[in-house]
Length: 374
Image (cartoon, rainbow, N blue to C red):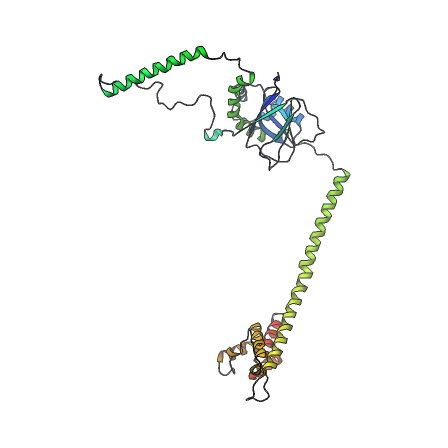
């Protein structure tokens, strides 16, 4: 019978998965407003779950006798306690609960039509594989049933201490007996208080029952999903079209636009390099070998020449005067002669022999290398 105070007590395991899928809450019902949640079966129909619990389909292949588990838990079978993430248009029994769980929600949102106040008790399920369980009677730390009494010599210090301890115990026991006469008469325990022993056993058996239900959920089949409405189909088609447009634009950028931009950038960089080499030739031009160049006359021209050399990575003060001075340049030119056409290599040799055209030689080497790589 449901309690008259309207307080609903729900025992909820902390390790239950929190997903947005619809599901059925399964567990023990100790009284009308006192329930114990064991598992949430997702994507199944509540009627099919209820029939499977009555027939025993979900209890197959149990590692322990299911009747013994029911006897410990004080129930004859498990029940459907409510629904999770169910639409408001679905009607449920007035004693069943409607639960809302989400991945970011630590405490589930529970409502019940019959309850005025809901108390959610979160607990961690003990793992029997690790020899974990809870008990109302803790294990005694003593090795024996009774502690061995030691015999001391009369008149010794130990004997006097033991005598004082015995007197203190008798005095305490007398005070306890007196307090019994002043204690308020106890009220008869309620159904929820009497169900504490059963709840402890249910907590100890909840992990095994949860694993058993999840293992046999495939025997009752999943819930048939309804067909999409017109508005849902429009939304799905719009989403698919959006994804297709994004993929098409990305392919257009990676296959066509990016190569064109890269090639234009390389061509612009080469043109900028050629213009810089031309400016270097102008700044280094001398009317006569013993005349001063423009970079030697103007400080501005000298700064421009230094910046252009830094851009071209061809410092004039570090380049050889002729190829006869450094034989390795001659070997490098021989390799270039084998790679390039004859007219290109002859042009490079002619430019290299000119001391005033060293920068032009560098630019032509870059162009020739581009022809080879192309």
